[in-house]
Image (tube, rainbow, N blue to C red; front, side, top):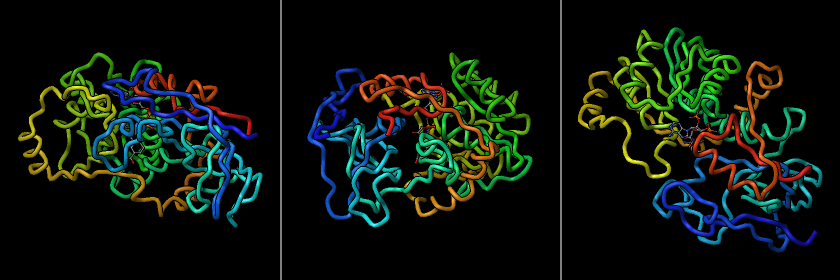
Length: 342
Ligand SMILES: NC(=O)c1ccc[n+]([C@@H]2O[C@H](COP(=O)([O-])OP(=O)(O)OC[C@H]3O[C@@H](n4cnc5c(N)ncnc54)[C@H](OP(=O)(O)O)[C@@H]3O)[C@@H](O)[C@H]2O)c1
């Protein structure tokens, strides 16, 4: 093979991304340099953060340049290795981009043990999103038995892990998800005590629905979504409550404030009166704990104690469609793209 395929950012979106913002290209197959590995990608991950990389604004990471390969994590088979930890035939997790092959430094790749779980799990339940949930909960959640936790995007890889960790710690876990089917899955597959369908609800309706399911108020809010869910949660936060700010997908396409005008002054006072802790979470800050996460969680995935659901799109060329759908909640479970049989 002398050629590879990749998807580049053709233009920056205004609002929701469209087909014309992406372009499929053929390029020369890269050669691994000193300390690098060449990988044939089997599965590529699609994640909400990729929407942020399409905008040229200041953030915790650089934007993708126009004409640059869209960023993504992936998992695949090592074809060539100039790194002592990897041999051809090994499996590696790393940032190969929206592409069917990639070269990265071996030091930045994680060697995947195929006995742990199917390959695609290395992008979800045992990958970055599962780790994000585990890192946020263990570092900042201070979970106590009998407390109540709320999380949005409850059937996604972050929310479903948050809910399962909360249940294992003896909390009441309330999910928020889009539609009756996802809410059923949140309860039946992931063990949430209840799940509220956010579709068609403004912040007041969310508050009423949450109040009915959280009779003792909310102690931990794992923030994945922003929007009306946030507006509904805030008035219900308890004394010494914790808010872990992980993401706010309702606003990624630049939508207007939808917290029913929840005023900043009122929020500030609420933080004081209830002595709330509001903690931003970025999984890369915790990456040194990744081996601890794998050691603790991989056996639970293997035994079925931790459940996971995946949504598999087929083929690199279908990645943009699957990504645009993800941003609207079209995915059910962790969205991956099958790139090859590597
Ligand atoms: N800080 C970090 O280090 C870090 C790392 C990983 C992920 N994150 C964040 O964690 C969150 C969840 O990520 P994930 O990978 O688990 O995503 P995901 O659940 O696989 O996909 C995103 C989900 O967000 C929900 N959603 C979309 N638009 C929404 C809206 N307007 N209001 C409410 N919900 C909406 C949809 O679920 P429903 O159909 O159920 O609404 C959609 O399926 C995201 O905000 C992501 O950016 C942060």
